[in-house]
Length: 464
Image 1 (spheres, rainbow, N blue to C red):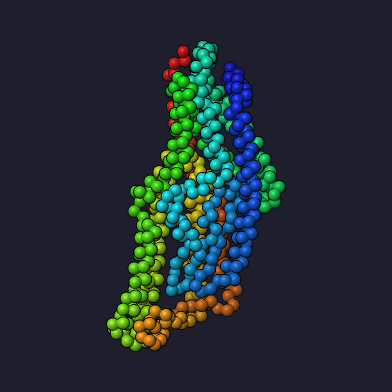
Image 2 (image 1 turned 135 degrees about the vertical axis):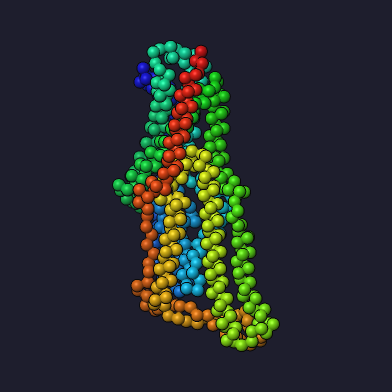
């Protein structure tokens, strides 16, 4: 009897407009995804190779830019443009790391910084769209049958209600599975034929894991549709309720998480951060004031005081940058915790973790850059040549004559063949599974909750 119900439901869905629309939209989106990825990845890979060589040639005792390798899985969950390069200042006097994307990153934190690339046509976006069709395939499975008078007839047979619910779930899931598999296979075939990446075992394992998480995510909306349909007596009412809840869970909660975190956060704004840096720079003007008031008269005393202030300023800048980055990280974590109320956010976070392209990946890269900076600093201490840098620009206007302010730094030797090179390590699959473990568990719990709600509601449903 279950198979008969499944066949009946599948035939009904196959003849519907919504299945034809889903199939057409799926093929179009997967085709666009492949075309956009092939073009953009080829450009980003070329730019990355050029930048690596250029930045290596331009390295100095002041800074070196290290580049983040483009993610070959970006077609699954798109990567942000701010992930491309990180500038590392490693001079002994200024031991800090300063991202080139620092301001843009903090700007994102002022608004929707969790999902700034929601419009990217990647697999995550496509599967999120599938969740809309999941409710379209289930909103009338119970209430619609009652309206047509067929539900009482089905239940009059010797079939358990749990079996009826299971059959309708399988039929709706099949309608999502068929177009997705066809579109995904065509997508992978095109990308593989383009030759920019060679799909191997690791690729298929990561992609398979994302697809599996996608199934768990879509299952939430299938079960949720069955639950709402078994709580209403009119399919129109069920549809309106489900569409409203879909908007809340897929759009409102994920995209408002950053704003909510910004309201509740104590993280300093960009202006406050800039004011703090200006206060640190104020020590330079304090020195100039002392020179003007003739508290410091000789070139030697001015030079010693300048050197002391410069070292002190470097330490304060490093502490300020660490404090600022830590506050932004806390703000990100708070926003992620709020967004986890949404199954869509859970699915996106878990998918990004699996392909090593999420928040934890960025933090690993930043940590690797910090370790690299320390290695460069150690190299300079051991092999760098001492040099004096002369600062006369700020002191000269108050005297009418030039004072040389001497600051000791270290410069690279002319031949630094053994200079440390930055090696970017991709996280292994077990590591990425750990990163996304919480999100995957929460998605499973969403399924359990929706299954219980649907089952209990249908058992108590008046089929007459």
